Amino acid sequence: MQIAPVAFTQNPEEPGKGQRQHQEDRFANLSPDERTKLKAARQTAMQDPAVQAAKEKMRQVAKEFHDAMHAALLKADPSIQPILDKVPKGQMGEHHED
Image 1: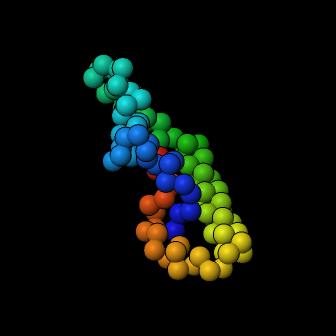
Image 2: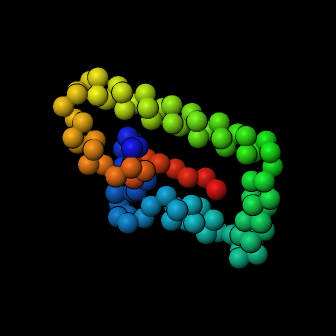
Image 3: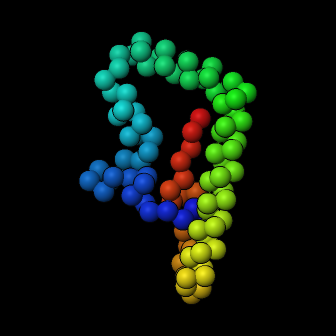
């Protein structure tokens, strides 16, 4: 379960636009050839052992943050457990990097 404001994944002024759409908007000024080159370079870079190790560290730190936040929320107000149970896992504030 991810505990973070929904605002991190959606812009209230643009309902239905999630993180992926905003990433695409960031590259709107690039030509199709530039986007293709950037995507290919990114895919190659993601195979680099240093990048893979850093990504794994990032995942571990995110999990540690999530676990600490979850525990702190319940410590602050144990009665919110049923509310937290209603939040779909991975829906709030989760960011994926390929």
